[in-house]
Length: 138
Image (cartoon, rainbow, N blue to C red):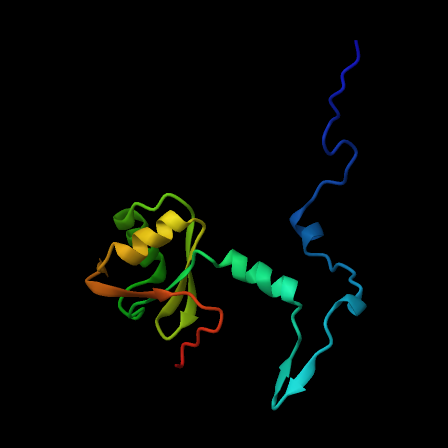
């Protein structure tokens, strides 16, 4: 009787940290061509790529705390515990005390959005809906 199970990675080169850091060749013709918009370089993003990004952030929120008084990692841990989140949660710093609350499900988003007010280390956690054009300077 012969086995139909194939060994994974049989004969394959083992990935090492050094191998992963080796430069990879890339076809530069696949990259978008940069242009200038005023004084700023810009690239055109295809609609399909834009929609993938929108889909990825559909459960996200924007939070704000005084991050001089509380570390972002502590804020995330406290938020996870207080709000009984069931999925993954990342706090991604944006600057000036703002951060993206990156969530992977709607239940957690609604729990944070509708369950407040939330206090972390004595500070009120301000939360707004995520938008693709959010600007910390406005």
